[in-house]
Image (cartoon, rainbow, N blue to C red; front, top):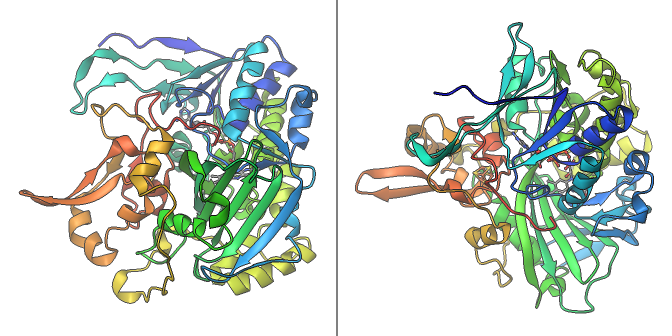
Length: 534
Ligand SMILES: Cc1cc2nc3c(=O)[nH]c(=O)nc-3n(C[C@H](O)[C@H](O)[C@H](O)COP(=O)(O)OP(=O)(O)OC[C@H]3O[C@@H](n4cnc5c(N)ncnc54)[C@H](O)[C@@H]3O)c2cc1C
Ligand code: SF4
């Protein structure tokens, strides 16, 4: 095989989300002659980004003080906050007070995907080189064991591993510093956390799954700038989560549902719960007669302060959601991603070294923000009522409790069918689109060449048809929002079929599988969802 092509930079940044782009922009602002590139697995910048998103603007103000003169294409000032408690499918109460973390006065409703697509040319104008369609497949190490760059995945490999006529060997991108900005459950980040035992002194990381649809409402129905959050139905009190409904301009509304991946019920299906939420008596009238423009799913960080791994290793560092800096009670991570990115750029600009970054981050306002709210999310591990009371306490005491509650790995919370009494679910008949998960995948516009190696590695598929079917009833068929996993039966007997082409890169299977045997790896660069304005 021929030698791989090598490109060399001062810094290689993995991921063109808000963290990666803000990092590169700040670095170039500080040192215009530095060579920095940003690589992105999506075919275009923003196409793999799925968020709410209501953003706090302060870090963006600091990064690009004039951004308001040329704002991103979707950018609606928040005008109103509402917080609802949904009792059952029919009844809901608007709470007189909104939790302080959900006060959004001064914030903006954006499409984070569109915001990233808007940031990218501004980075390029400063000289940042951005490569969409490049999936970082593996980290590279030098002779001392330090990270020295990343290897881009090969293109044109057939399902059986042979080379198609279109085969192109992935290049190596080498740099004294690699910045991991892969977002939640990063593929390289996960490997590096394990290799350098970066999580040796913290709690396990925890996650949620967020499923979202962008709707076009009938004319005149939208209330641009209105922000609604709900808790309660259709979730039972043991399951953490809730919904968000953000009114954009032009009668468009972003509706989404987030569920903690520490749910216990093996029969629970987050996608179905989201569809139920849309049929609540207070929500359905908003959507009826409208149409879905775009849809998808993405895991979200929930571990916060006590799950933060060490954020540096020889030759590399973590920023944004790759580190786990999202503020869960606010359901906001964008401001933390941009803030940490700027701080990291300021830290490395002179000597391109990761040393000292972890201490700098921990002493910064980014970490102070996480510390204040650290006990709120784990308080819900004891159920909704305890969680709410505890959240009230933690809020009025500004997080000054002398204790820190623990986080547990999400996969370990799933209960076995025979020992779990599932809560009764008062689900209603569905009439709103989409019909099913495959119809939702259509709105994600996800594309993978079918003739490429399956990018969801299941270490032992025997378990699926022996133990898992008995113990958990194959929950992969329910936790995956894109119908990728299917137990089929043919002449050869029962087996797991992986419909990898449907995958929307949410990473839920990599997190929630109770045997921890599913590994998400990068498919060919440019594959995956093509989100529009999510
Ligand atoms: C449902 C949901 C609702 C949310 N709501 C809000 C909200 O209202 N407000 C808010 O502030 N935050 C919200 N967040 C959180 C917010 O989206 C994140 O905190 C933010 O996107 C983190 O930015 P990031 O740059 O660290 O990661 P990301 O935005 O995830 O960006 C990572 C990028 O890296 C790319 N990438 C990953 N791995 C590789 C690889 N190996 N090679 C190449 N490219 C790679 C990805 O394709 C992606 O483009 C929400 C998140 C979810 C899931
Ligand atoms: S296969 Fe995994 S990463 Fe892909 S959509 Fe399903 S749960 Fe998400």
